[in-house]
Image (cartoon, rainbow, N blue to C red; front, top):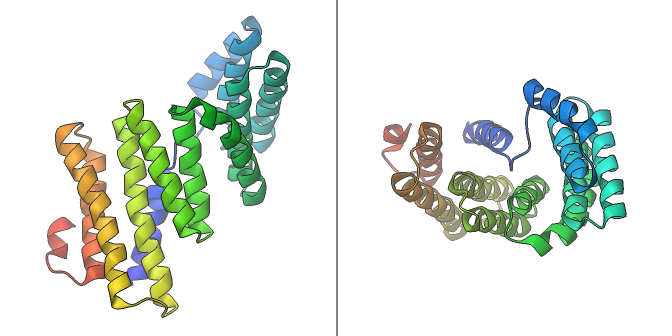
Length: 244
């Protein structure tokens, strides 16, 4: 039962709160981008092409990939390093939606070599969040945790506190996923189990504190309390119902 609940929460949180990958095509935005594209040139055109790719990738790999490739080629000609890095990130998004994890990861890592020159930035925060998710599901827990922390640091540095907390919530859930995996393999001591759950609770506590001090998003608060219920249930603690 616990594993089913955890799987459902991971799908919900990592799907809806993943690192700034658009999960649907906003037609008004797409229409606006297509309208301005013919009137742009140089680095502005690169930015529009990259935005088109991000918007189109969730539903059409070919279009998302094609616009990102155009952005990448133009960036190379213009020596527009940040545009090149974002284009590689967008190519990674396109493969991500195609469920081609290998090519997604390859392009994300290529993008990282460029975008880390612009740290801190929103694009790097997005990229690091995606790398964290891929490593989490590949069960590379230490890498996933490191990417999540670095992503949150980038968001905090640019004042994007909502996305900082979104990433911290995912980080907390990653400890529970690791706990469940080790528990199913009978490869974890009670001490390690509680250490993992306490780590998850720590990041949830941070997000609750941020909610009280910096923003008051009700969806964020409901996720925080749902996570508390999940973590305490795994710890065998009382008062689980209070959080749900």
